[in-house]
Image (cartoon, rainbow, N blue to C red; front, top):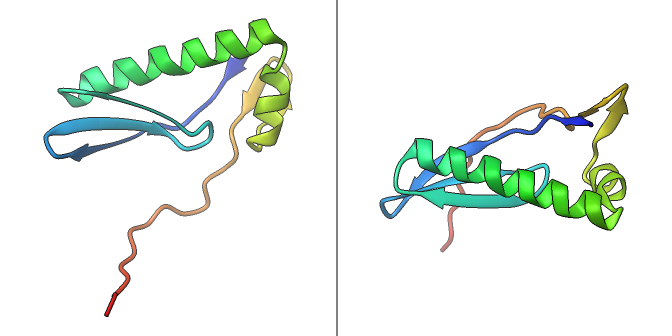
Length: 89
């Protein structure tokens, strides 16, 4: 059994809540923030279980920037998260 840490960003788009895990590039949605977060947990779990059964979970996590620390996979550290603007003429 391995513990894998990940970050969930939740936002609203056209009335739907989107939950996104940037480390694994996985997203899910729901009609509420809570349902989107529940759905993303299930999506991540399914993704990791499938990857483990295929024997590729370690390779996938390493490519995503994870580091193994004992029985835990530590996610890449976010240094900053911000909102920027760009102007298009």
